[in-house]
Image 1 (tube, helix red, strand yellow):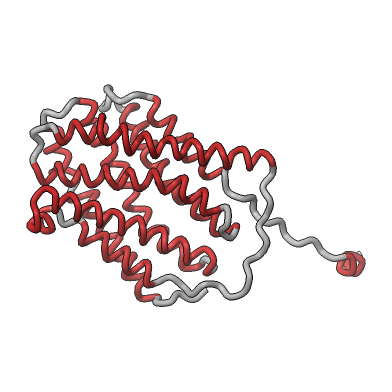
Image 2 (cartoon, rainbow, N blue to C red; image 1 turned 90 degrees about the vertical axis):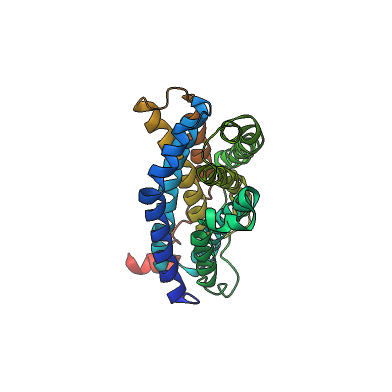
Length: 286
């Protein structure tokens, strides 16, 4: 597999790593201290703190998956780099939108995270290899059980995306945040994080639908990757509950997130079976 621009991949790895380091080790303390010092409802503060740590884990998946893609075939690398580009691009857009909404033009400097995700998006897109020549191999057929899992994944992930985007945004944690006296810049950063989480939840059903027509190996890779992203939030939620630092969060959260991730991963087509030897080869070996 030849990348269109190998330098762009390595540059994306470097910028994504810097972004993950800053998010995890530089922004965490001031952002979460401001959140916990505010007067938002306890559930909202605990939930957004949990989500911040989950987003830190997600930020680390970008450089890891970019490195892993070096040795993958173009049929996998091209859509996977496109997915990384779209995720980072959507994060940049959310930061720009919240910064402009909170501060006007000066918000581009007050909420500068967009300047980290935007280069990753551009560089990952530039690194995509050319479309593989020839016709794709025939799809491996799903068994009846896998078809059931496929439709369960579409229905459940769509329900979760709608619930998270509508009810979650207007009646839950981000609404509590906006109504609180939390300092404005951390408030905007956390709200942008929430808006990106809505994009993330919609990525699951859209990727499952996309995998219906995609090459088998590409579909398997991307479905596993987006499942890992949601699983990171499930683990963060479960850990905070287990440590007793989020008593107001429902224990059903990690269960629903884990089920969402599991159904998404299991909805992939089965691996292609190795080709059987023809009769002539069999007789020769005998």
